[in-house]
Structure formats: C-alpha cells, structure tokens
Image (cartoon, rainbow, N blue to C red; front, side, top):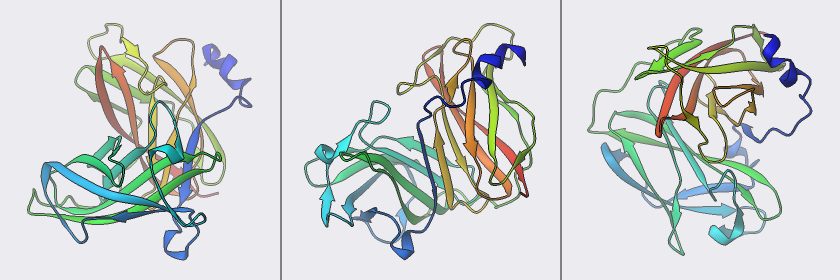
Length: 257
C-alpha cells in the first residue's frame, strides 16, 4: 500500500462526484425528466429514448445551452435494471427541443434512468425516471450480489482493495487494472478521467457517479466515496484499455454504521 501514500495525503483534493438519495416524488430535485414515450418500452438493442429536462426552479425546459460540460459531455445518462446487471452509460444529443439517447435494453424488467449534468449556475443534478421493458429476454432475478472485489471483461481485470466499508462513513477504495495474461494494460482517459465509477444501492434508488483520484500511473487510482446505506452495492468500473471501453461489474458489501 506504500505506493498509494501520496493519495492518502491528498484527500482534500477536488473529487468530481454526482451522488443522490432519491427524493424526486417529493419535489426535492431541481431538474426532472419528462419522457415523451410513456409506459413500457419494447426491448431492443437500439431503443430511442426521447425526453425533456425541466428546471423546476426556473420553470423552463433545459437545453444544451443551459448546461456546462462535465467530463467532456453536456449530459450523462445512466441506465440499469432492478437486478443491477443490465447497464448503459450514454450521452444524449439535443435537437433543439428534445434530448435523445440510443439505449441497448434487450432484457425485460424495471429500469432506472438517470440524467446527470451541471446547470450554468454550477448546480449539479441527478434526475431520475423509471420505465419497464417488455418483449425481450426474461427479466433477471433480484438477488444479493455479495462482495465481489475482482472481475474481468475479456483480458481486462479490475480489482478493488478489500478494506471494510461502512454506511455513512467516507471510504477510500483503491482500484487496480491488470491483464489476465500478465501483459501491461494500455489505459487511456475516458471522458477526461482514467476511470468512471457508477455505484448503486441494493434497491437501485441511490446512485453515485465518481471519478477517482489518479494513482502513480493510469492503471490505478482511489475512489473517495460515502455509501449512504448498508447492503451490497453494485459498482461498475469503466476504463478504456487498448482503445476499447470495458465496463467491469463488481460489488461491495457496505456494513452498518
């Protein structure tokens, strides 16, 4: 762990993070999603999700010119199912009236959709919407994920350090990228960061989107995050290795306070 001592002394450094405990039904969020297509979506690897963003304070629709860039994009859309297995992270485009995003949703189930961005006044927002998907592959069963700190996609391996994590207490989790065959990964930046981390609570209603502090090289870094509740959190780590985007599913068991 000595090679990470420089990280441990830099905890006051800026960390860009979107986090939220959902409260949209109670009007606690400034920005909301108004979907054009109501009800369920038909499963497909190319679903066009069309929506508007509404600023509930300014009482106006939010377009591209109303947002600052955040990690090279005006808007991030994160989508996952209730089983926390299906996952999309895409970047909608704005046509002057509507936001549009192409989603790959081929499995039935209930899906959470989050739009994340930053308004011109600096306000960060995470607006949520839920939708059902039908006529696809059978829905996946919702089960406890367990504590899976190491997983691979192709030759790319991502591993999280194994310290205990408690709800409501800041965690410092180190991630490392390696290769199954022992060769050196070629990690390059994705959307302005070496890695993007999406963490989701067991019931799907808490989302954290974190960008880690850099380590000694592009294959390692520190995730500096507080998990609001206990349980098994799904964590997707996204890295570009040898020019290919890899989304590696992991999970962390968060203990009681």
